[in-house]
Amino acid sequence: MSAPNRVGAGLDARIRVSRGEIEIDVALTAEPGQVIGVLGPNGGGKTTTVLALAGVLPLAEGHVRVGGQVWDDGRQHLAPEQRAVGLMLADSLLFPHLRALDNVAFGPRSRGVGRHDARDRARTELDRVGLSDRATARPRELSSGQQARVALARALATDPALLLLDEPLAALDPDTRARTRSDLAARLTAYDGVTVLVTHDPLDALTLADHLVFVEDGRVTQLGTPAEVLREPRSAYVGTVVGLNLYAAQGDSHGHVHTADGGLIVTTSPTEGAVWATVPPSAVSLHRHHPEGSPRNAWRLRIASVTMQGQSARIGLVGEVPLTAEVTLESVTALGLQVGQDVWAAVKATEVRTYPR
Amino acid sequence: MRYAVRWRSRVALGVPAALALLLLVVPLVALLLRADWARIPADLATPTVLPALRLSLTTTSVTAVLCLLLGTPLAWFLARSEHRATSWVRALLTVPLVLPPVVGGVALLMTWGRNGLIGQYLTPFGIQVPFTTVAVVLAETFVAMPYYVLAVEGAMRGLDPRLESVARTLGASDLRYLRTVGIPLVLPGIASGLALAWARALGEFGATITFAGNFPGRTQTLPLLVYVELERDPQVAISISIMLLAVSVLVLGVLRGRWLR
Image (cartoon, rainbow over the protein chains, first blue to last red):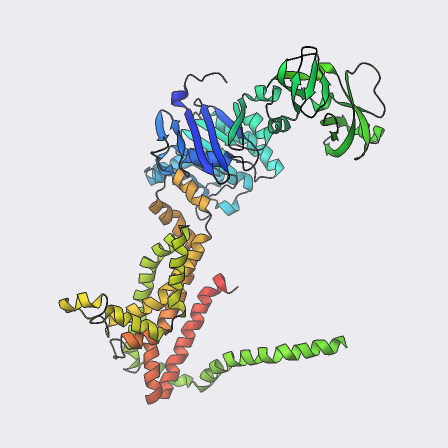
């Protein structure tokens, strides 16, 4: 990641907290206006990171600096209400007894703005998320998508320097999620503070975030732009998220890649030493018999799972080189693919990428 | 064969169940049957009843206000604390619930009496607590407050703690969160807690008569008067009892939506 030059005005944090079994040590930096996507398996420390940034959890060590102001240095902790922070969680957590307008006005009111001005501000924020006509509705009268948008408006009504979104779309049904995601994207482009977006949905991360940070077992396992991460995943989890077959392996100059499990993969882009090797699922072809022609890689593997995804199927294969193959539904029926069956899997050497570990 | 077994089990369970119901319901029916409905208004307007009625209403109202002002913060601390001591405090709080009220009265005497734990420091100032209206309020608060605190604590524990996290990131202090979000959301719990505590205070007898005595106009509340009138004019005692029964049913009505659905 290139060194951001305006980090003094943005977010600079090192979160060290121990949370039950795991020790969390996560560094995050961002410039104003950036959206940092934090991804990782459940229980890996994502939400703890968010709570520490919000000030709900005090840091054991480390620091949180936002907009040049020290929020936490491991000894002095600013309380949440003293931080210019906005928080939005999977459940909208609107105050059920307050109308949408008063939910959004709650922040400005709590920060000392007069009733009239706070409501004006709330109206503006509701308008920005397209809900000016629902200002007098109680939370239970709003759809889940509208509730999420009110929660976003409420979080932004205090002009936070840091906006924390913890799985903001996770509680929505798929249709609503897609629409709310584009509403969220539109609203975030107009926001000039730093956004930290925690999600386990790769689509959220890829469509909303400028930078991705992967947190597993309390540690950052990879960070970079979505393009970098998509091209070169660096942990098994990241490989799964971006949908690539990923192998930790040893490469030599002749294009031979030996996986940790004893498999051999041939590539036309050799890298020597400890490498990651990737195989796109769409580059795998399946055959009843040993494939003819020139594929440099052909393994006899057993089908462990078959799942459908739109017009294609994902075939989980186990054996010398465990693979996920993406094939058309036609080939599933033409080949009569069934779980437990043995098939030949072929991959062209030009489709195998390697890069240093 | 199968029918016979079912019939026998019905009898085995049905008879005691019916007996239990009779034990609870018959006394209420008996009270209603013995009431002289035409006399009730006149009975309640007699010179002995009116002061007792007024005293009961004022002392129970003050008790309710004390519960509200002092009990609500206590409930809040109990609800949010995860400290080990909290469960001990909660257990301590339930003691007055199961303690014989007379014992409560003795304990209050040991506290506020002339030589009591606190009373000994009040005596030099000429302040005497036992056998005053203040003592009535103290006795009623002693037995009623636990009902209130436990009801409100339960309601507060039902609140999503993340609501408070969100409120605080929006800039709300503890007090502002309580005032604008916490309390409004537990209002139903506060209402049922108040109704329970008030009804318990209204019925209080043992602690009152032990600690406050039975002085008409000063410490003689309705339950004490019922006891006295039963010797003198049973019909008046029945009339007051009918009124107290009506009040209890009214309180049940308040609680119904909350607890008794």
